[in-house]
Length: 263
Image (cartoon, rainbow, N blue to C red; front, side, top):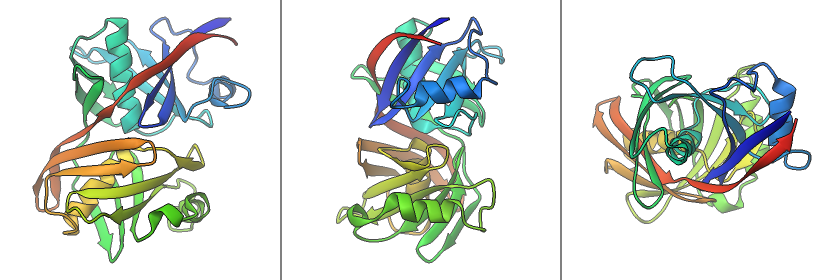
């Protein structure tokens, strides 16, 4: 079959988008999804996202996300933002959206300059120990606050943590974080499980970093700026002790190209 696709990116985190309301693509076709994400033999992407009819009354659509390895995965923040931009392009929404992902309901809004704001899940379970933190923002994230992030072997050090006995077979994403001279700004590099490499950005990762930085008193602001290799993102929230609510991830989401591929 010939399959129409759309390629989107959010701060360098890139995704193959497919309008799957006709259910042409099977969620169980791991080999196909893996091939479509392959950068040499397919389209090339960090992940693939299916836009489907909603299961929940009042929602605009449903998000089904797969890592580049072809397996359905936990929530992807930048992918969610790109899917909202995709839904707007398809005419499903105008400037606001409600949809469900694997981690539950989300709301979103689109600014006139291709900036998408995505509401993330509330967070209350946060582990902190010295320069290490762990929390789940729709996907699990191990965070290391360190220095000279630009010089780190993110793939090597990230894989060692991801496959360590602490996380067993489930694994985790790993973020290496450096605070800048500004109180509200952090530099982040992320190793993503499923991609098994460093990616240019990670939405759930920077969300976790912002909350962990505030929770450990590394910043006192409620809107944190994150510098990632692919650009800039921001995360805002309301904090009450260890409870973080009204969490919003904000950044660009743009169409790169569209086409058809023989499957």
